[in-house]
Length: 290
Image (cartoon, rainbow, N blue to C red; front, side):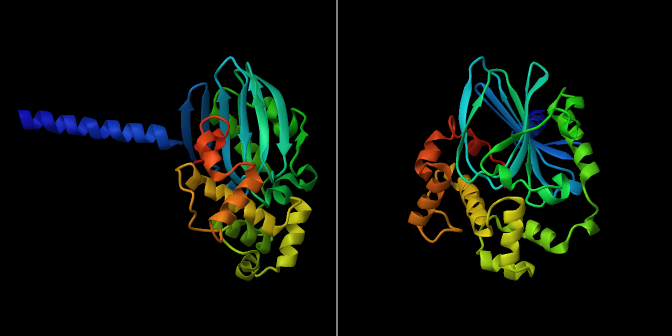
């Protein structure tokens, strides 16, 4: 009798551990994976795109200020440009497109505001937006509420918002054979190496000259390949920084180089980023996937 009771308790314990792990790390909603963190006065969620959009979209995210006070934070460069809209009391109050950021940016979130965003990859300007975004490097462009039909979205939940965006983006998504192979190789290689590669090696690996790559990135993003790799490299380093590791194993010549590059893009040394990640730099605490 005792052994049977023990077995039941062990099974219940395992189920509880598994449930808690899933709640903290990964749940499945249809074709999407979602991650959530809950902190005092703030919640954050991520969902990843369907297979058809993974070459254009890195992730969808939702951030909510659940308090009655203004919430101030600092966003560090992460090598993605973004489409963002903000909701208060069920209505979209702000809608904009950001360019790439090469340095930190201060953000003020109003009370009870929900922010939804999409992180886009480097070939999205050409193939999804059909335009260059270099004019909004380190800046934003306000959008009309009917852009991508956002004014018709079901704002009931994060899942419904993501599904609405998926439907719109899929309608703008080209067929695989319509994407030029050199663009696709560049896109896929950069998001595998995460900046841990020299610009010359990128050119050698994807069989596209560095000069042409620079021309492409400058045309659509307003940034050189070397600069883009540096931003990627620092963003990857945030994962180590938030764990209190200040001696990176990849991407930097030495610790002095590491500190200099991180400070150039964030305005802070790695140690200061670590100390402020729970409040001012909450983005670093929330990173789930590169």
